[in-house]
Amino acid sequence: QVQLVESGGGSVQAGGSLRLSCAASGFTYSGYCMAWFRQTPGKQREGVAVVFSDGGQTYYTDPAKGRFTISLDRDKNTLYLQMNILEPEDTAMYYCAVRGGCGYLSVDESEYPYWGQGTRVTVSS
Image (cartoon, rainbow, N blue to C red; front, side):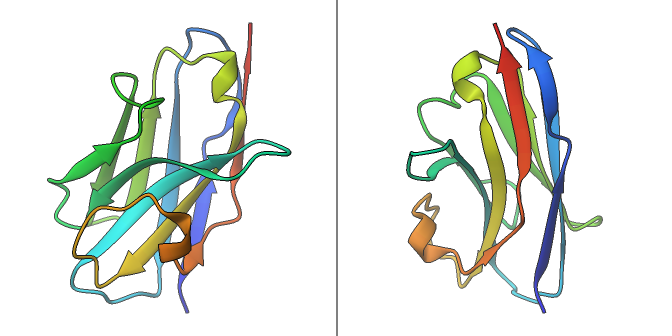
């Protein structure tokens, strides 16, 4: 049974930083992708960043480029998202997700079968 548990969300002022974590268990894919998504009320969930299981290949969507860093600690089975220079527009519920058989990096939520429960990030101006 795949389990993903996010943590690290909270409230910060604009310009601040947060590091989100996602503890993963229960899957044995040899190659997989893990990704961060976010969602605000009334809006569709959007991709933020994705990393391949070797940790060396990453992709960021435009809002994340230059400010966020995705990383994977395979020894700890934990995914991270370091978020710097946060803006009020980054306020959202953040989710991690995983998919196996990952042949390419994708931030299409429909391709991810397993999701965590989310952690809330609030950025005040």
